[in-house]
Length: 599
Image (cartoon, rainbow, N blue to C red; front, side, top):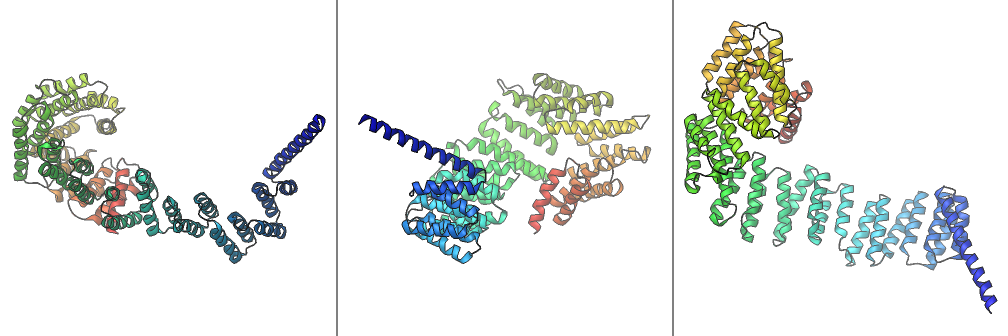
């Protein structure tokens, strides 16, 4: 008996080993594209293991590759007779008919595959994936829809949305994404990433429309309101976003946090009105009990100041009204290191716009004496105070403060800014060689703004000294720049006119026009500013100020002269005529935005 068992075991093991060897060899032939050899082996393996789907599929695949269509069809019919409920067989049959360009018959088989797939969620996913790989999106959609009708379709909406996206059917795509979001709210973040990557402006419009409907139908589903807020932000419609977060804040009796964050986003994009409305909502509706109350007061003042002064469209009465709001704030919260940033802002308003230098200096002298001040805030106060001393012609006080900040923040951006301002002082004083040496060092600044300004200054000095035996024209020009900084515009005009009178056709002539345009902008004489800039564009198209003039003039037409078409034309000119300009990136953004608005 033992001998018989041993012999039987050896035979069995030999058979298994031989079977395994055949399987590996068939796989090797198949991978190498030797389908005839592979087919022969898979046929034998299939006969030995007739219920093995893998060997059947491989045998069938080899026959199809060898274009043995009749034998393939015969094989499939036999298998379907044995397993009439196996949806994969109908899929394979449809694929076989597709290969023979029998489209109608193939579709019939594909639809039978969908009919046979049953209530198995994994099987439905698998069949839909097969159709998707074959780019038969309608059949994949039909498969998922069957699963949803059978009640096993949870999670299918996401895949349906992807299929509709591939088909370009925006309405259904947006609809299914929203269904998938309700099924799995944690998907919000990944959906936002997907929307950013694939959605066009039209897609966002469709999504916004459907979100309105969803919010009306399901007002308790807060995630739709959250997503709508995000859509508004993508479209830079901060007013719409603010409307949504205010509604959520009131409904949920929140502390104003959402409103504050949208206000900050709007402020960063210079939508001052929306930002101010958000901050004032918190002030009026949340009161002093809100942790965002003080910050909202501060940020509201900051936005009001920027809205007023950056628009170059204000009256002295409006400036005084804003000054009054700052003073009311300081009366309410007192002057201390905690309100120092507001005092610094007020000082800026006094110095540059209300022209009360003494008050500005007094405010900042008080700030820098506060104990335990945050170092960066203190340094900013010193830099501003140095500027105001410079406006008063107290050069020594200015350079002392700039040097202090430079020393205290040697490897910080504040230190580099202080160094730049000190170099500018040397330039104003006519010490051009020393100034240029400092500007050359600052060309390597980690701040792109400082590096670019330093480079411009260095080239400007080099260009206007290299051709001259005298530095007098540049000296007069630098003095004019100092007068502008000091708001002494009449004196600045005198200096600039003297350059043109005493040194006709000097290389500084386009710079004179450019500096005059800056004065006219500051004094709100926009038409005269535009004339100066146009003169540069017409007379000095190859000059160093040409791209500056084109960009500045485009800004005036966009924001001050209300001529969007002219602004588009000038931004386009930057892209084509001055493609290497440092303004080209920003010009392209504005060009596209304005072109979209016009369309």
